[in-house]
Amino acid sequence: MVPVILLVILFIFVLILLAKTIRVIPQGRAGIVERLGKFRTVLEPGLHMVVPIIDRVLPLIDVREQVVSFPSQSVITEDNLVVGIDTVVYFQVTSPKDATYEITNYIRAVDELTSATLRNVVGGLNLEQTLTSRDQINAELRGVLDATTGRWGLRVSRVDIKEIQPPHSIQDSMEKQMRAERDRRAAILTAEGQKQSDILTAEGESRAAILRAEAEKQAQILRAEGDAQSAILRADGEAEAVHKVFEAIHQSNPSQQLLTYQYLQTLPKLADGQANKLWFIPTELGDALRGLGNAFGNLPVSDINDGSAKATYTKPDTFENPSQGYGFNS
Image 1: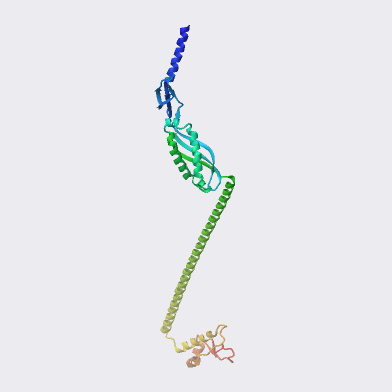
Image 2 (image 1 turned 180 degrees about the vertical axis):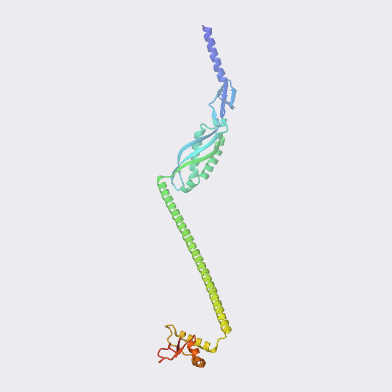
């Protein structure tokens, strides 16, 4: 019975030795091996054999890039204002040996180094510069951290300021200032829009007035041309009529007595109209009357009675009305 128990114990011991001898390192991790308390080697990902009891494998180190968000740090600016700044650091372990033996806790060391560097950088800036110079602060922080953490086996790839919290009183003042600035910009934009609208309206009205004036000008020109053409046509018509009358008179060869008679019939028409207040009797009237009297005196009585133009000469009793003169009744 005793030998069986010893065999079982021996078997278990062998299994433990094998477990201590064979180590599997996963991808993205690294193992530090110490032999009798002294650094021996770094185990890369894969299967490795170590000497049990003599060799000791330390806790595995993550060699992937890590992101650590540090709590808010109170920082005093150049104008003596306390602001809270939250930072995020991106780093990677490049040397597991240095990260193990050069620093006790590299994450805490990065946190403290970030806080100290942040105070130094922000202490030379006022509040407005701190709020508007995040890229500058990030670049300075990354430069200092990368230079310092290099001997710790770390590589800082990026540092970001996640949030900057100014004092509440300053926040209220900034909000009021921003509201005032927005109201000012809105008023300026409204005024510029109204200005552009007035300019466009004035230009439109001016253009419309010019077009109306040009249209009226063209209309007046066309009316004047129409009146001129109408006057020309009327004058041509009257000239043609006079020419035809003249030709007709010459073709009919009227006698002197007929012309005298027509002349006497035309004279009363000169006195027509209420505007005529004074009528001068032409000196040729007497000659016309004498010529007409001689003509009628030479005609036979039968011709006078049967003629188409029967006329009697009447002499007015008085010339009180200037328009009244000699008249013939036919």
